[in-house]
Amino acid sequence: MTTVEQTEQAEQVKESPVIAITPVESSQLFGIGHCPVTNTLAIQFKAKADAEPNTGSIYHYDNFTSEQFSEFKSAESLGSHFKRLIKPAVEAHPYRKVA
Image (cartoon, rainbow, N blue to C red; front, side, top):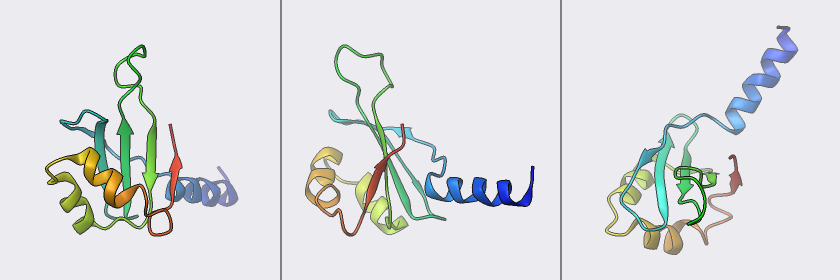
């Protein structure tokens, strides 16, 4: 692998780091994860009723600190917290679909 290829690969990892997703108790979310190095929140949504389990879409949200992740994962309702504080904050937490 050349230096150029290594640099390109490093940039791709930085843009979409692999983040472990932990299953959660939620009617809307399958699991969540966080990368403190890149301040990236990962959310896997539940799949549609007729789909295979654990096949829901995964999104990454940028600029999400460890403190914000702690607040999110300890929220009484993860879905409500997401809809109220994360989803509408597109400028603060730009997102992208990764899977």
